[in-house]
Length: 365
Image (tube, rainbow, N blue to C red; front, side, top):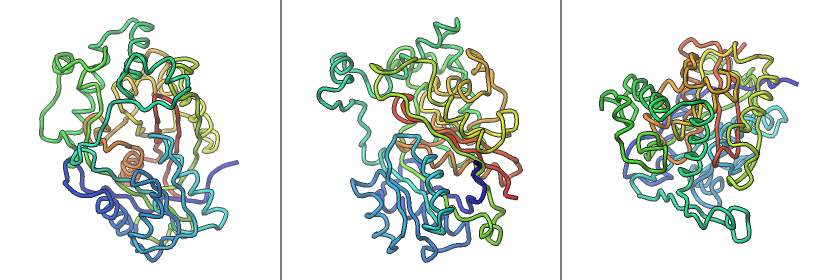
């Protein structure tokens, strides 16, 4: 079974950085800018997917926008969820539940100083029993465990991992919207000298904390061909859940990206060799080699040397990280296909390598 028949027709960011604006204002910016990019209006929207506003995020956003959609989704599965929304939206459009879906997200976490590194543990769970007593920083300490294991297993050190942050900053210097644009390059020594947060991860191994967000607009491929931009077709998607906390992680170096990627490639009828550009959730430097290896772009232990273009706007390490990055990965992938890439893969990761979702996009036929 393939996923042909739906496409992304609009993509845009809201204001980024430190905006001083409320979430609903940023959400409205993202939605209306993406619709304008598509040549559509709010009157065309009959499907909406979002989270992060309140317990009733979809109803609150729909009410604020003055629309009454016939389909919605407010699933929460961490940073993988926006790629999951693409799958749900494609299925809903194909089933005739709706015709035009907006997938959006925004956060004002930097302005509101709302980022909290303390984990929340449900009483009686394995995480509360086995992890909480050690007071880990969430999720940094857990990614640090993966990084420590990765470096030990493959005979690498912090300087090797630092090259991920250096490369991300370099790419961000070509993106005027990036938080680190114009701040100059990083060196490996800069990364190693930064404050240690949770060994072996220092401050520059960690994603940014910014306001921001974005939105994409999806519709049927046949309809998409008559809109403002050539359609970016949804070729395939896949997802996987493996664990919540490290107490139940089956293998620190084998993530659900293996399965989600395989499922997306199978739907698309493609392989990693067919992909021109990758947008990968880089919450920490370790996310990049582990993710690239799991998705088939490098052999185990060789993800730091991957050659496929990736995280072209700077990613969460150097461009923007408003709490959840997934929708902005989709925005960047759409732009790269419009600029000439034939195919793009987007991969979201949620929790502590807990949830995974992969989307393959390409030039609409």
